Image (cartoon, rainbow, N blue to C red; front, side, top):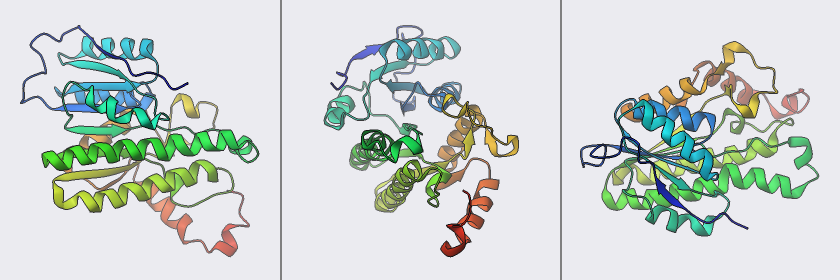
Length: 265
C-alpha cells in the first residue's frame, strides 16, 4: 500500500525565522539519504529554509530537528513515496510555500544480477531512478514556469553515460533521467526555470558501503552538496562533481561497440 502523505512542521527555531519573502527555500526530494541530508545542511548553513521529504516520518523528524538545531532556519518535513505517483499533486499542494529550488536525490542502486531474473526488482530500480524523480520535477517545472523563476536539480549518474554489462538496469534508468533533465532544461530555458544535471560518480554512502572504491574517484556527500549549491548559484547546466569523471566517461563513450562488448565493465 502506498504511504499516505503526512505533513508536520519542526517547531525548533521556527518562530519568526525563514518565513519572510526574502528567505529562499529549498525542497529536498529524498531528504533522508546521505546526499540529501548533506545538501539540506549546506543550504541551511547559508540561511535557506529547508523542506525535507522522504518515506519515514521518524527519520524525517530527527533529520529536520538536527538541521534546525544547527542553523536558525525554518525546516519542514513531508512524507513522500516516490513510487506513489498519484500522490504527487497533493504532496506539492501541502508544502507551506513553493520552493525556489527543488533537488531530487531519489534513487536506488539495486542488484543487477537479481534484476536480470526478478522483474519486480528491476521495475523497482527503474521506477525509483527515473519515473518518480522525473514526474516530480516535471510537476514543479510547471509551477516554476507559472511563477517565472526557479531551479530544478536532478542527481543522476555517470552510469547513465553508457550501458555496461555490470549495471545496465541501474545505468539505463539513470540514462533516461539524464535525457529527461536535458530535455526539460531546453524546454524551460525561455520560461525563467533553470535545470541542472548532477553526475557525482562514486560517493561514499550507505548505498556503496560494500564496494571497494578508489579514493581519487570517490566524493563525500558533503562534496556533492557543495557542488549542488555552487552549481545552483552559478546556474550551471551539467555538473561532474569530480571533473575527472568527465574525461573518464568521454573515453568510455568513445570505445567502439565491437570492442566495448568484449571488455569486463
